[in-house]
Image (cartoon, rainbow, N blue to C red; front, side, top):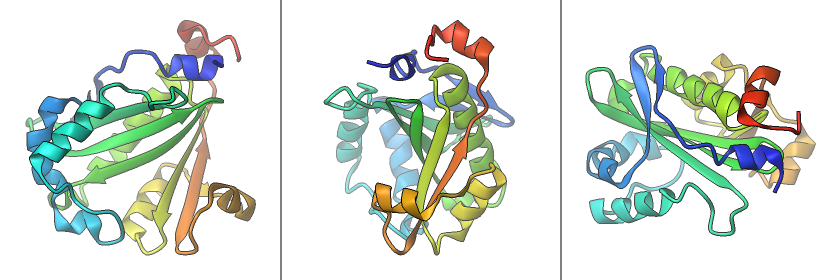
Length: 196
């Protein structure tokens, strides 16, 4: 196992940002998150809502392992909670060998347009770099999803090359966006990442 993935084994922690916090996702978040994740506006471009609270509990329980069944990926999922206590969405990263993370995010439509999604994703990306050895992030989105596109652009993600699109099997109606994260030698030393 490379040092980069080994650092993904660092225990997840709560991450604070302006007006919100990211809590490591647990089964007991499922009931409140069901209301967020069944918002029809979230599925305008892709995916489907969970079909029941029980199925969402099972999914969250499986994700509490924080690792893929084959052990090759770290699965890091946080729920987004506002300072007033409301659960409003989730952010997640699949961390692979070599310090790469594929990220995704969902925010209930009642909270769109307030900068919450941008702050939540920025907090996750900073945590991935500082604590989990991530040096490169990517996200795949439907080209029609301009809200998501603008969020990623605000966070300095750029379009990947055509070769990267082909290598990742990105569909014709999708974009692959990516960002290289600054390397912090002090943080790497604190994590014990000897690959720096």
